Image (cartoon, one colour):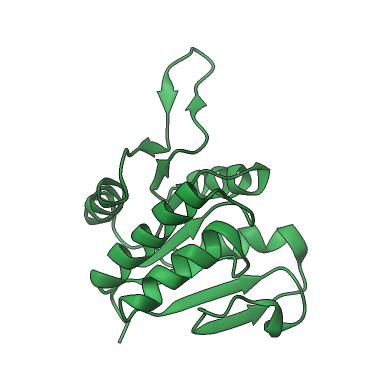
Length: 166
């Protein structure tokens, strides 16, 4: 079902505001409506809201968990992969996805953004970290104002970037 379809990482903090959860849920729903697989960290907050939205739209969600117990994953995951790697699992999340949508978030989200950029993967930010180059110019992630704009942008960017070989 997902062969050839993009794997979209939706990342953000394990605790979030109701407004951030609403954004994440809508992003998850829109990604699933387009037939892509959602990849997330599998816990609460933004991750759970994105998974809830994707599942409501009939999508599949892979949660890459920091602990060793798949039961720690949120109730909306299709697949829960327990890694036992703690925050190091952020590298697995970013390596697995073709592109990333970052919603709000803390240092873990920042790490995922940086890893994805290092891997030359497109990143779209929705109310998240902003990067600047040493000379002060704005750098990725590409900014979006709405969930729909974030999803449209990541799919547009993926059309411009050939699928990476893993």
